[in-house]
Amino acid sequence: MAGGAARRHGAGLRGDSGELADWLAHGTADAAVLVDPPSGPGILLTTDGYRALLPRDHPLADEPRVALADLADDAFLVSPNGCEERVRDLHDPVGARFAPARRVRDLATPIGMVQAGLGVTVLSEAARPLIGPDLVLLPLDPPAARRLVLSGPGSGPWHPALRPLATAAAAHPAGPATAEDARPGRATAG
Image (spheres, rainbow, N blue to C red):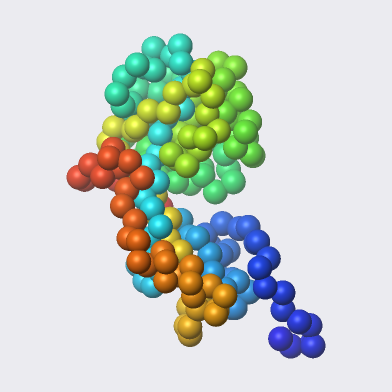
């Protein structure tokens, strides 16, 4: 590395997919999990479906799935930290109005607000472990999902410490996280 500074390996860096792709291209990071990257090299880890998060006593809570348009009368909560653009993109193809009542930064706050009956939101299936028994995550209709892709350096080989991870991920091709995410014709965000 220039200037004599030694490069540390194993640092866990966090950023959005645009930042991470840039870091990979410039050697700042050796690997990253990107959300809905353009076609190219990488290993699909999973397809992560989007879900409506509702309080268990919501009128739609017992439905098998929910359309975004059916949530138009609810206070819609969204996080501007990477999710807002994707959630907005889910509304456009189905003609649903995107009009957030509140924007909140971290993931715990909209979950708590839904729990308190202050609104509804859309999260990915990956949030399921954070959801208490008084809330429900319902698949969207039509289904929508994001792709999580393990990406390495834009050119050149994987770092030796990461080769086993890349090899193992490639040996176990990912499918959709749930059967609902596998429905034909699902929309993808991003």
